[in-house]
Image: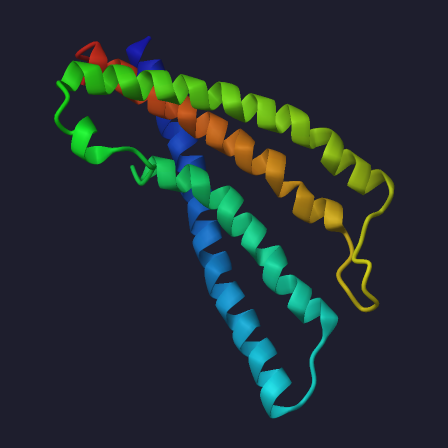
Length: 169
């Protein structure tokens, strides 16, 4: 059973790692889009609406895929100067509890965001600007996807610390 739990946590973490790398490469794309937009605007006195919209469209996958990757890397926000002074057992208990609370929060966020995405898909929502990007539902789909991934990583996080808490290394 412990081996199966470790394999499940590892599989989740591998998926989160792929999503994190995708978010990192999206950062590179965002830098290139912004640079291209600036060059077009200031050197060629031209610009396009879709390129400007693409800038903020790329921020969504960076944030929503990157948050689970931050948890995987241990970059989550906590009060380290207090946390580091706690006994190891208490730290593990806190990590398990917060991981489980994160799963609950993520499930709620996914449940609340799915109708939002489905509505955008049903009405064929696109940019209100002429020449803007269409398929806004695709952008909005990163909300439930990102929180589902965060919930999975929260479960893997809780599982890893629960295994350590039990002394199963």
